[in-house]
Length: 244
Image 1 (cartoon, rainbow, N blue to C red):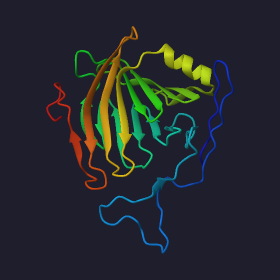
Image 2 (tube, helix red, strand yellow; image 1 turned 90 degrees about the vertical axis):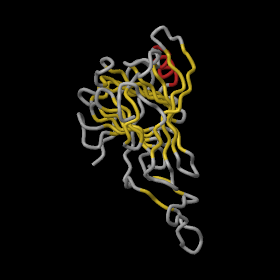
Image 3 (spheres, rainbow, N blue to C red; image 1 turned 60 degrees about the horizontal axis):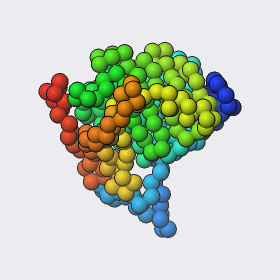
């Protein structure tokens, strides 16, 4: 049974998360005549993923268990202690941060946090559509302690060490103020082409504790999409790791 969450802090009114009975699975649209639009490795012309209503939050198994949030643009963010997984709206590609902390693209270890002298190694942000996910670690080799999410007029803060929701509110002013109050650190963008279903994961800027932002676009990895669903192209040679 899915449990909807409501939590308020500061000003504004908390938003209720409505549970959905829809299964978390692929649904392939059919053209007239009922012939599937996807054959072999071809991409479907229309494909969507059943999920919770966008902009909602739930802990399906109750307090202290993994949390799931679906952004307004359809990205699913799941937090289970020190593992944070972001899945694209098509359910096809994922970026995962785990351990102390490592970064995976569709299961391929691309890099660890930091990696270059100018990249922050204790804070990491990911831009997904119109939302931003900011993770706070104990240090260069420390696990993620807290995760903040800013998504339009909604924001939340989550304690990773205990799977505890600290704050969840529907309030534009509160969201803007909390976002502006914390620096982003090393920041990447994760996005998927809606036709080819290829994903790209790239660094776009670094923002330090003094809120000084340096644009630094660097491709980290891409995926093969429908044509090569198991392919992951690793473009970043992490100087600390021999396999990236």
